[in-house]
Image (cartoon, rainbow, N blue to C red; front, top):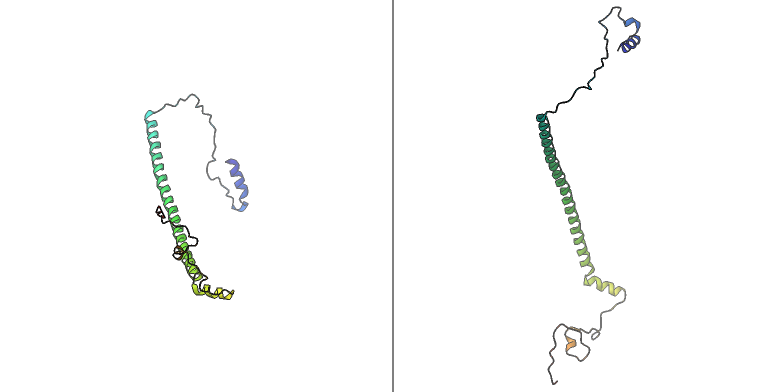
Length: 155
């Protein structure tokens, strides 16, 4: 302290210095204290209180931590739900657009115009053979069917 006061006095200009003494100087003495012979006595009541306090603090921490975890999970699930809703609306719009495109591509008039453009013509009569009902009456090849055939013996 004395060294600090001396440097402080040197830092103040000579015009501002006071000529009189302003109090008593502070003197510090170091005193050696030997605590090696002291023995700490354990207080069972204090130990019990500290264990109860620690347990209560741990339970409180777990409750707060559980609440915070649930809260943040709820927020995260909210974001996931909003993302899924947005994705569903995008997929629904894409599905609607694809259905419109499919309907426009399957339009018979459009197919007819494209076919005539590349030189295709409508089929002549007799050029198309239907295989579903007409083939059963003729003696030609027959397509496989799931209808069981009954065989009559003797024919």
